[in-house]
Image (tube, rainbow, N blue to C red; front, side, top):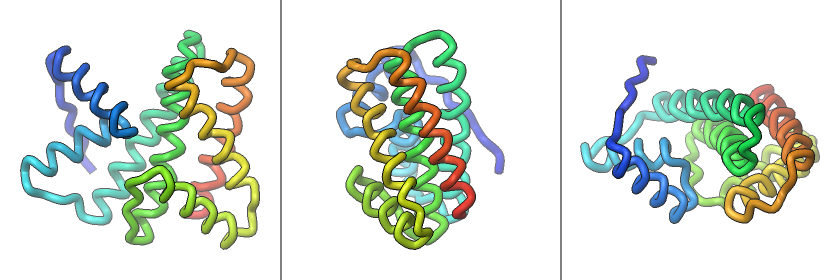
Length: 162
């Protein structure tokens, strides 16, 4: 799949990030959604899976780089984003589109039950703490690093399910 980048003026980029935060979305995900809406288009199921996969990989790579620099708020959101997008990718493979936070929980619980792997739920609960840290900035570096490792373990487990 070919990937195209869009360069936004700084003011518009800031507005997109603010709107994404308001709607509890990831900026790239919201951007694609707005473009599709403006073009009156939808991604086909394969396109949606590929979109989620590419974004998840991008966020995971960025999270690891940012962790080295110590920006714990951004690290928290990037690990959360990589995890959420991996879950959305698995759902899209099954023809589902998860749009709300609660639907992520329900899907992870279903996957846990089907695979008989309770760690999926446990790790997802931990990763949710990273999502909250993005808003609250209450965790220290050690805590973020520990949960970030569990986020990576969860992503690996999820990829094996697909």
